[in-house]
Every structure is written in C-alpha cells, then in structure tokens.
Image 1 (tube, rainbow, N blue to C red):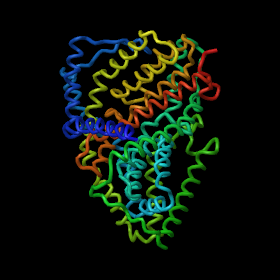
Image 2: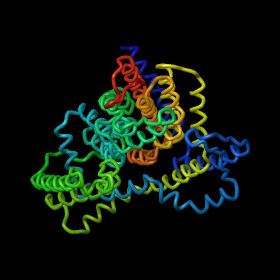
Image 3: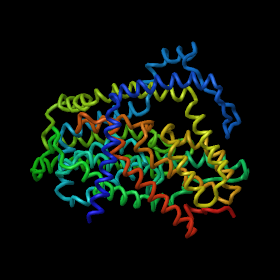
Image 4: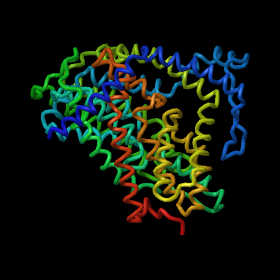
Amino acid sequence: MTELQKKKSGIDKFLSVVERIGNALPHPATLFAGFALLVVILSWVASLFDLAVTHPGTGETITPVNLLSTEGLHMILTKMVTNFTSFAPLGTVLVSLLGIGIAEGTGLIGAVLRLVVLSSPKKLLTFVIVFAGVISNTASEVGYVLLVPLAAVIFLAAGRHPLAGLAAAFAGVSGGYSANLLLGTIDPLLAGLSTEAARIIDADYTVNPAANYYFMFVSTFLIAALGTWVTEKVVLPRLGEYTGDEKPQSIDRLNKDEKKGLLYATIAIVASIAFILGGLLPEEGYLRNPDTGEVLNSPFMSGIVAFIFLLSAIAGIAYGVGAKTIKNDSDVMRGMSKSMETLGSYIVLVFFAAQFVAYFNWTNLGLILAINGADVLKTMGLSDIPLMVMFILVAAVINLVMGSASAKWAIMAPVFIPMFMLLGYTPEFTQVAYRIGDSVTNIISPMMSYFALIVAFIQRYDKNAGIGTVISTMLPYSVAFFIGWVILLIIWILVGLPIGPGAEMYMP
C-alpha cells in the first residue's frame, strides 16, 4: 500500500511540474501570438537552408514559404480577417451555443442534469460520460461543444470536481477519436486515401469505409474503460475537492411544471427525430446525398451543426412552454445572448490561434516535418510488431504539429501503405495503426482545432488555468490510451483476427 501511495505521489508531482511549466507560459492568446511570430521566423530560416522535400504521393517538390518576404507580408495583411472568420471551430461553436443557450436559458439542461444525477450511481457517471464522448465522434462537434462542458456541470452537480468530468468527456471525444460503434465521416475519407496509396502496388485494390470496424468497435469499450480508470484513480485524486466560484445546480426533485416541460421537450425531440429519420431511411430520402444516396456524405452530415442548433432550440422552447419559463420571445433571445457573453475570452484566443494555424499551413513546415519523420521510420528497417508500434509513435508525434487526420494520412499513406504491403501487411491494417497514433495525442496537442475551446471551458472553473493545466490533466489519458491500444493491437496480431468486414491483417 505504501508503494502504491508513493507511485501516486510521484505521478502527482510529475503532473504538477508539467502544469507549473505550462502555466508559467504567457496567456494562451499571447502564446499563440508568439507561436505565429516564431513560425514567421522559422519560415525564413527554412527558406535560407532550402529545406525542400518530395511529396510521396504526388511527386511534387515541397519547399518552405518565406513569410518574411514581400509576398508573405501581403498574405499576413490581406488574410488576417479571413484567417479568423474561416477558422473552422469558430462558426461551429457560435452556432451550436446559440441553440444550447436557449435550452440552458429555459431550464431544460438543468432539469435533465438533475434527472441524470438523481437517477445514476456516481461511479457509473464517469463511464457513461467517456463512452458518450467516444460515440459522439460520429459528429465530433457535438462532443466538443455540448458534451465536454455538460460533463463538467454534471460532475459539479454530483458533488465531484467539474474539471474531472470535463477531462473524462474530452478524453472520450478527442482521445478516443478513432473508436466508435458507428461509422463516421472520417471513415470513407481515410479509406479513399488508403485506396489511392494501395493502388501504387495493386491497381485494383479498394479499401472500404468499414475496413476498420471490428477493431474500432472493440476499441470503444477499451477507451471507455481506460478513461474511467484514469478519471477515478489519477485525475480525481489529484484535483481534490473543488473550491472554485461555480456553484452546482440544484438537485431537488423535479416539480410538476418541470416534469410537464420535460414531456413537451421529449415530444418535440421525438417529432424532430422522426423528421430526420424520414429523410435518412428511404433510399431517396430528402436528407441523403441527392446524387449518390449516401448518408455519410450527405446534407445531414454536412449540416450536423445546424441540427444541433435546431434540436436544442426546439427542445428548449418546448420545455420553456411546458415549464412556464418562457413568457415571450424576449426570453428566448435572452438565453441566446447569455450564451454568447461567456465566449469573450474564447474569441480573443481563437483570433491568435487562427493566425498561427494559417501561418503554419502557408509555410509548408508541417508537410516538411511530416515527410521527414516518415522517411526516418522507413529507413530504420524494423519489422513485425516493433515496426507497427514505431509507426504508431511517429503518427502520434506528427499529430502534435499537424492537426488534420486526413492531411497527415494524405502524406503518410503513399509512403507506408506500399511499404507495408511489400512486407505483407494489408492497407486496412496500416490504416488501423495510423488511426491509433492519430488519436492518442489529440488531447495534448495545441494544434488540435478545439484545443482553444477546451482551455476556455477549463478557465470557467479555474481562472488561472492555461495550456499547462490542459496538458497535465490530459497526459495520463494519453499515456493510458497509447499503452492500452498498443496491447490490443498486439493481441489482434497474435490472434490473427480480421479488423473489419473482409479486411484481414496480412496480404493473401
């Protein structure tokens, strides 16, 4: 028992050092501004040394773009506004929270939280939150903008530290990005890139979108279990008792009006879901892709943020009418306005984060780093399990500097899929290994699109929190997910199980 306590103490000390170092850095917005300036300088240095590489897929020569040049200065000045307004997470967050603001303002979210807290055992809550986070990856915006902040409120209402709930949800949504019980939009995207890479060796090879389904199905329960263990055994003990300013919402039993409001909201949600299913289930449904009839690449999936807004607004208004918390349209608008008031610091942070990400993409530094990293692994001459583990590590490290899963795979697939095919591994198996590496470092990568939003959520409960707080809190999840996923992959290799429908690990 004493040794276990010492281990916990050692982990706690290490994470505290990580947090202090991270939080000793300037304000996150200032830090992103500094990163942007550093990228400008590095682009100049890279251009001086002509650090060119050849794109493995297209054969195109990738050269660094110097942002200290006249052309670079023009780009910085003319695209500053569009860098900000076109930053993908910004619109998603603003539109989603407008609808969620209605649901929160009318009292719907509070009533649902009380119902969940009163009816669920405390320990089951953690597993449910991590599991829900993994499932939400089918439409990842739902997890980031709805589940992550909601989990913090649920934990606070249950008398637990809100940051532990936030961390558990974030771990499921982002760290478990490649696990799911359902196929998501990323599956056909990666499969298409894998197909193109495989045809370098076999011109007729096709990777189907469900190629990793069996492995990802099992991974869902693995990540939910590991996320629950880390939350209960590492994060909660380290955080201790919450002493911040945020107060838990009342957990009194629902009164007559609130129950009526929930009934109205349930009817509204059921009717909305019926409308959605009516557009998805028929082969020529009005929410399917009008050209191909697909669901994954359909207006429904592309408009998932709009559905978050509409469902939240409709359910919130229905609840407000039933619970008598809405007297007129001004009450609805007031809820939307209040949700926007909480985003001031996030918008400032996003402005600088958007400039940094744009500069990094313009300079081609991410491409150059990714291609060079892939070349290093290729020349090491490893085989079998060590090769796959090393490949996962490379993908995980590259994920720290290049956020997009599809962009990284577009670079890495043409190198590793043909190489692994020649070694006897199928493209589907290589893709699985890549997806593990791409997921485990999402939660500690400032390059992840929603990282700034997570910082803003955490600062609601800890005004002094910064990037160091996020990284130190999420690092145990990252380590646990990496170890657990690698062990699962090794077992899969040793047993020789298929990784998806018609997808084996080894070439015939």
